[in-house]
Image (tube, rainbow, N blue to C red):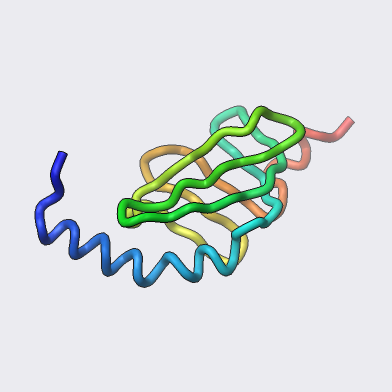
Length: 102
């Protein structure tokens, strides 16, 4: 599906704002992946392009896989990354430590 020119321009502008701060803050970081009932610690490898970001998750607790989000849907702060409308989040601290208590 082709994007219209205004959508392409909008994504380009958002990419210019988000790409380098995302890479600087989180490339190679150890974080906690959370989606529904899935929660595990992982290391991030972030690749970007005009569409958005693809984040490969490497963990000893779960097989390696990749999540992604378009530039206008990805949001992040100093200690978390998320993607609107898809349900995954990454946190620098475990969001539910009680899940691991014995």
